[in-house]
Image: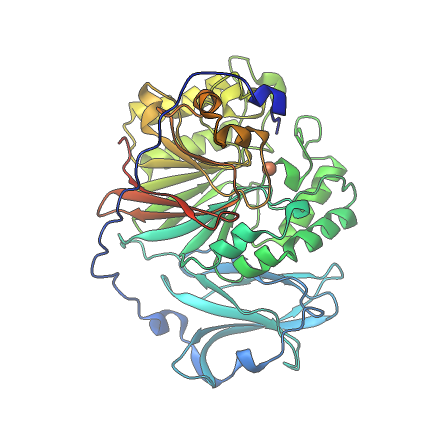
Amino acid sequence: MSLPSRREVLLAGASVTLLGCPTPSPTPDAGPPTVDAQAFDQATRVAFAPEAIAAPLAAFPQAVASGAMEQATALVVTRAPTLPRVVLRVWRPLDSSTEVALVTEQALDVPTHGAVKARVRGLAPATTYRYAFFAPDFSVRSAIGAFRTAFPDDWLEPVTFGTTSCAKLANGPFKALSLQAQVPMDFFVHLGDVSYNDGAVALEEFRDKWRGTLADEGYRALLPAVGTYLTWDDHDFWNNFDPEVNGATDGRFLDARQAFLESLPTELSPEGRLWRSFRWGRTVEVFVVDSRTERRASTRLSADPQYLSRAQLDWLKAGLADSPCHFKVVMSSVPITTMPPPLWGGQADRWQGYPAARSELLEHLVAADVKNVWFLGGDFHLGLVMRLDGEGPNARFMEIAGGPAGHGNPLSLVLEPGQEANREIAFPQRQFLFASGDTNATTLTLDPKADTVRVVFQGATSGRTTFDQVLRFGG
Ligand SMILES: [Fe+2]
């Protein structure tokens, strides 16, 4: 991304008033219905005490991770560079320290690059599972992970999830991710720049970047704690990667993509697409958008600009309009909000610089009166809660820039005391409810019955809750 210089940031300007006070959270209802997990996963009660097995970092130098959760399936991954073979076990805990409800066991060959990944099937919906990888003789194990499967089709229950972006290893350890790991969540959403892989050219170099980033203590705390939905951004390849120059047949691009897929619990469709959606009952549909690898910069200001491919944009428009879910969450690695000039440059790198494509999506949603579309964006290295436009029909839509996990932005200077005039230029209060230059744990709770979205930011450096408001679509 393109960032302003310190000098550009320190401009004089008008005055600003304080943000509003936090709104109390709603009273929780009686709780969700339950699922008879045994009827779905037919687990077997076995004597097994995984916590008693040693978990040396030498055997499993990074934690486990899970993702792409559906009602009956999920992906899991770890790295076991010294073991030729491992055993994956998935279980439900019981009220016993010596027994578990064992759901599945798989013997897996470890590829020479060390990352080992598997799909788990036959699970029950809305159920929390534990999993770990073991040496074949069960002498050592990985970290023990947990994930929750998606809700049954007819559930209309609250969902809580965390979100982040931009984890640059040079800025580790990622305290924001360690903080986020302490928050109870149904799932976690990563908005890209999962790793900064700039400088890598060949496959083994990309793998080395992933080995380093995912061994950070923040990732080792967070990824075992919760299942993930992931998208990618430019640094997962390299800075300001241009797919029109380094397209689908470029070796460096293919190597970067392969290392991403080896390292993380996500996968491409048979057509090679990252974009897809996940439903949690009738509560929320999460749209994983690829706003980085399908763009065509040369078409940007043409009559038919390509920010997403035509196929992806049509899928997104139809999916949002037709979704049976109360909330629609759009994961766009690069924000869709109109960032106010002059401090915000770099429009060419985001939706704002492809105005016809942006308008096509938003005008479709406004014309069809699609409610409760909530955007998530990363890339800016700031924590933000903002309206897509300061006024007009798109002001009904909100975007939350989660995290960041480990990066800064020079614009955070205007958030300091004495910079109120510049703050109003960069983050005018009629459009921005919140702006933070800290790294943050960011948590959203979607309550379909109350029709509210609670957004909470906790600053990793300050250690304080800096934003906690209950929002309504269009409010
Ligand atoms: Fe970034």
